[in-house]
Length: 181
Image (tube, rainbow, N blue to C red; front, side, top):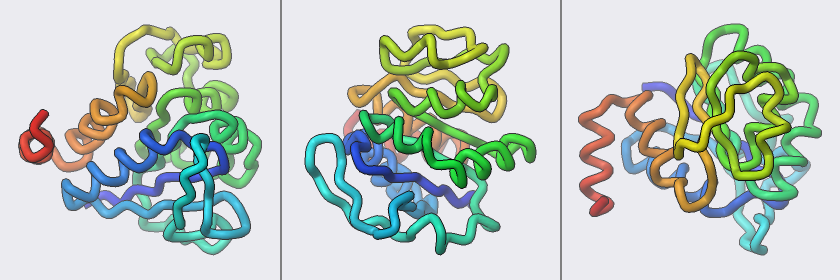
């Protein structure tokens, strides 16, 4: 089964990060939360603090196959400023590995030129920062190895689409039914 790394920066959107981790783990998909800070404690946009599994500098990404970027502000801005993460994203993209971003976080992918001629979605108002993308208002958009989601109220849709991509439609339906969706 593919392993996932989900990145946390101060100001992350709690719903997008935690719902995604929860839903992926319900599907038995291994997920590591990774802080881009020099410590494991990361505080979200609504003052909810969480303890990440790893610190970026200490993480080994050799067995990770999917990268997930939750949005939130200023969390997405902090992710976009973290050069080591951007280098990792470029490497994953070059290898055709899966990359997912929701809400404001697709700005990281847009800034790297990874959305050129791709369909994508994001939180309303950030479309201009998705350089080269064909932005559409769908809840979740998959184009090649890139998955983008619109925002916090759609975190379940985003996470369930990742489950389907990683573990298949049957697993997605089982998790969805267990959540009474």
